[in-house]
Length: 142
Image (cartoon, rainbow, N blue to C red):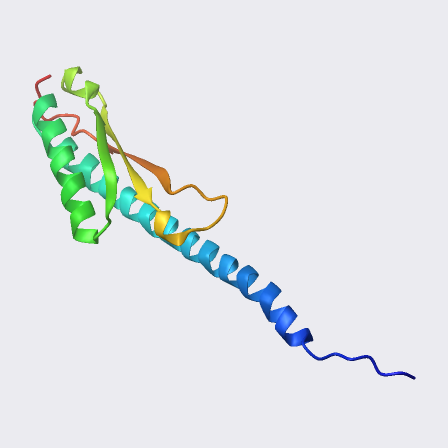
């Protein structure tokens, strides 16, 4: 049996394996950031929907929802750009005694540019929606 020269094979393996491992780690970090941001958005949407459902009028509900969503995102330390809060408060026009709910959608653009993962966009648009019922017998104005 002849013995082949295997010098340098560990260097070649490291040169091939290290970038693949770094890419794998970056993808895990990206997934973690995305999941954490989505959780924060869901929490902000729930807070906004609840705040809007406690308001007495449709305009007050919209203002309360926007303030609650931004406060929740600030408290959770989520730094995303283009935060948009959409409030569907048409249920305020229903007569007292009829069921209704306020729907809130919170969306933002999460910055992922510092990960430098090939094939992954520099940012990602995340969106979360929640609903909260209006008190059926409470007076409200459209």
